[in-house]
Length: 122
Length: 108
Image 1 (cartoon, rainbow over the protein chains, first blue to last red):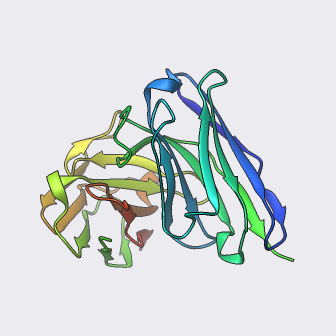
Image 2 (cartoon, rainbow over the protein chains, first blue to last red):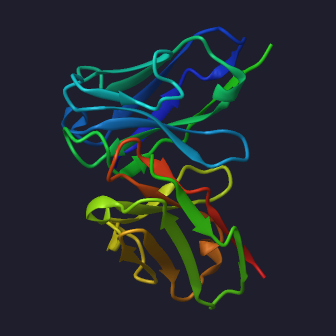
């Protein structure tokens, strides 16, 4: 059974940093693109970032480019999102999700974690 | 960036009725790379349909997707009580991938 478990969310001040983690199990982690999608309170879904199976190719939404960094540790079956220079508009539930391909960054997500809430506020 | 507009914003129907949800793209979606997700309150999204009309694993056949180019439709043939939720479309034919704003299917 595929499982994705996010952690690392919490309250952070504007301008601060936070690192999210997503522990994966139930599939061969290194074989699939992984992605982060966020959802602001009461709002819709927004793609944030994706990384290919090997970790050598990444892509970011313009809204987070230069502030967020996606990475993965295939030996630990874990996906990360390093967030810095956080703003109020980054407040959201952050979901990690599995894609159905190894190397194509755009795609649909066939499994999702339950999400972790990031609140940016002073 | 491709903008997806979903309509209606809210659909009020009774169990057993047919639901028709629309997703219109501002530009043609290449290769019919469009997906539909269902989201219930407090839960993560769940993949229903990919490549416009292919049902994901375990999805009942009352859910069907159709369309191409800029116009896509999700149809729920007979609403079950568990189908009342918010539905999102997503295009992944070009970067950045984008989502529609959602359609809420509520109980009438």
